[in-house]
Length: 344
Image (cartoon, rainbow, N blue to C red; front, side):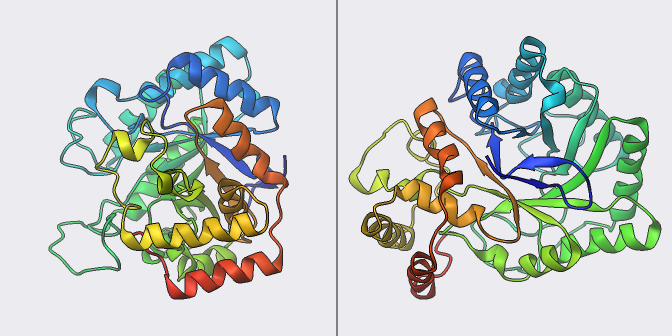
């Protein structure tokens, strides 16, 4: 395994992070425990979860992933070996079952954090993230910002003040964002800088061969402000493995849950075909090439992988040993130039 540090901290994190959102729906508790055992045995010390998991979000499975991680902590006794990240869900009209008001008010932040700590069977979370903005922006399926009616009032200073209180209590150590825009990242950085409040250490956004939009705007912010990217969906829901090009694996997420259609376009299919051809030309696994591309980007702190089987997990973790040559990167970029960011 390879390691780096969480920006502006002395916390060492593995360059590959274990994503857990399938635990509790596609994966049983036993499956989840087996994945965590294998990940730790192979050098991974960083887990990512969220209060809304497992995915797709449903009232019946709300919090199930955190519960499975919590029972693993209790059974294994390895809480202190793990850097743990979780998230509070932002506004969504379908999430009324989570709490009275799904927002980032002080009351909601307090309630969500305490419930996560209970489910995780721990006294603290190393990195607590805001899962998506309260603002009407950055929706999946939307390319670029569109002005629309928005009742949001700027509460970023209050959010940081509330999170600072949790840090002082020892309930969280550091904070981050997720599914955030360049403007949102800079607003949080601005508030922390001018009001002596905790700085966001990371942003967790999608990044893959089929979605490189983070490179426009956000990557420069990360580089200049020392904020790390936790890249999620690096395999584009498994599409970049090439398995769907031949109609394989009917039990995969995008087959079981057709609402996850962001990587199903004709352009995504064509780009995937070309990326798979590059991998085969160089005798590489398409999955490992896709993951290696993400991991070796300078602005990526950790690459969040997920799997529904141990076989997939083993292949994904072993991608850490692959370094793509300049020749391969140039071939990838040639495809990207013709079919840029086909996933919205």
